[in-house]
Length: 397
Ligand SMILES: [Zn+2]
Image 1 (cartoon, rainbow, N blue to C red):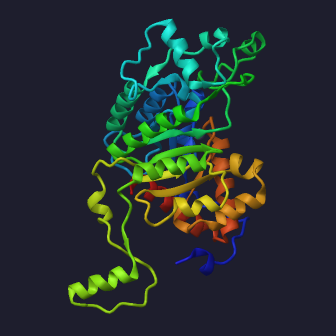
Image 2: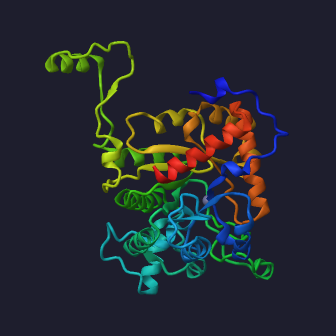
């Protein structure tokens, strides 16, 4: 049933139905630890909190541990933790899965690593390299993330992804240091000027691929960041899906099969091809090389790639989440409305993507939920219920 055909027009003056459950599919309150104390008094039901880098993995775990009632198996915890390494920090990882002898122990190996993974080469900019952290082995990152995923059985993998646009922040200037915001968790850009250096795509891809494979091994959903990289992201999914596609039979093959089976039924009306793949439930917890469900967070791409991401033969279910800040304030209104209108009802999620918890986060969630309901022509209550169902299906299957 399509909500858009059966429900009356939304009335924006409606009281917002928080009681139906509002789920933030992607946010970063641990970037402002002082704000975490606000979470219990927020109107949103559950925050899916992303880790991104060395400084926040433990903070995300601690936040989940301190705010969730331990031992309670609820499907609506206050916080759902998500563990992963963001592409903006992917240069800090040494890919020892292809270079098993890689080491982080000497200054020379640190320099060589950053010269290898950054473009343009920072070989003549040793000042820049010296302020970068000692790199970490990919195998160690994967082991730590696996442990955290085990510790939190409903946790996700994220934030991971690819970003063709970003450049690394430059060396801290004296002025930047003096105006630094003490409330922010360290490790992010924090208002610094950008350097010319980017992380090579093949390196970002290797770090993403390993984390997607870990999500597959643990059968966890994933939150994916993709900026100007939807083609490369999709190609990587395809590579991981290879050999696991859901199988469809052509009409001719179906007829042959029927003949062989004695033509027991004569159901010829459907143009849809029949799925012959293994049933979803039997596959559910088996380790596979790809995640069961994927959220393209703050999806900023055009309409066309959506068809590929949603192709029925894909063995991962792909969702798209939207934020008021990224999708509704900067992007052209036409582009985002075309994308939201093109999606099926059951693949849309909402997120704040905000670095601070509390009222501003609630306000952004209400804002994006209302905008999506309006664009889809959903009645506010029915739309909010749909978004809640979508988050639950994305997280729990
Ligand atoms: Zn994010």
